[in-house]
Length: 300
Image 1 (cartoon, rainbow, N blue to C red):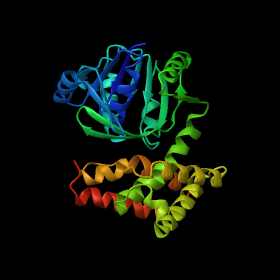
Image 2 (cartoon, helix red, strand yellow):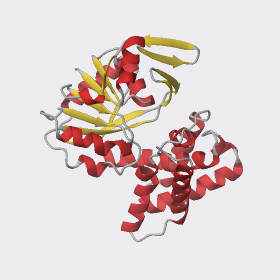
Image 3 (cartoon, one colour):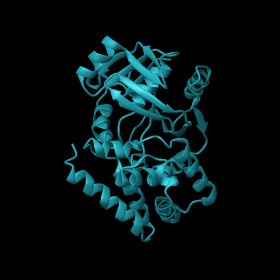
């Protein structure tokens, strides 16, 4: 199975490094410069004190034709609209598409893709991009995917091989429940760490921060009408502890002056609250604080 990975951020690099052990991989990058550097240097995968060098073929995203049997879309949620324009102009529709975005606002974009098997996924691995061709694997976590529409026959083969190379990917039955579980985690950890400028573990370690965690989670649970909120809260705390030394993607975006995925995360929750005519004062406050940080730091 030939696989194309669209996006060479931390997750794109991580997937390319691991999956290349079993599949022919083409990694599509935002710039031709990054593609050249990956072709020259390979991908450096850092795990603790160990560094592996993996050879991967890279091309600029402008050369993506969707000809691979599986295309993994690992760009940020706000980068999807321009990618969708390219997708709709390809000569042939890709057979299988797997989208790995945070939040849930991208689902409406996927509804207008026809004649392809579409999957959505959630990634709990900790990863950080060191430079254009180096990724640090900070911690192992679950990778889940679920069918959004179409047929799932070929994806089962993909997950079976992934398990054999110690990069397990689990197929879930219900994509909405799967994404909601990840959304709850992202909606608590990302905004709070970005506002407070702390690592994930500080949200649990500091009793005052933890009080804020509980209040935010309670409102999220109310908006999403969560089933078994106690279990989901414990799952969120478990992930926070497991990734205690990590800096969230939203915090790293703020520090780098980049646009965040706040629209896909808290923006989605505000839309859900509006549909149900519910007040979401805490969510709205954190949403505005992150948007203010983006504007104040001149996001690009």
